[in-house]
Image (cartoon, rainbow, N blue to C red; front, side, top):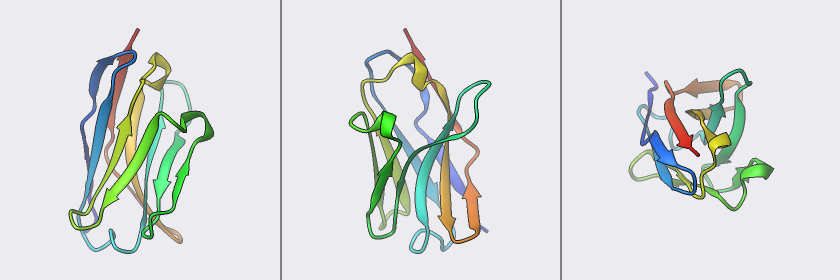
Length: 115
């Protein structure tokens, strides 16, 4: 059974940083593209960043330069380093694993940025 468990969310002041972690169980980590998505209140879930097994990165254009995604294949973990946080980054952040039509989601972790 596949499980994705996020951690690292919380409350931070504008300009601060947070690092989110996602631990993946099961056998998906070596075969699936991993990613982070977020959903703010009243808005649709949106892409933050993805990283393939081979390390190819993809970011939402608006977040390039502030957010960095990485993965540790030995630890079955994917990370999201978030710097220079803004109040508009407030959202629930979800870990995602994807390969072809198979897709898995974590339960989400809340990130709140105060002004």
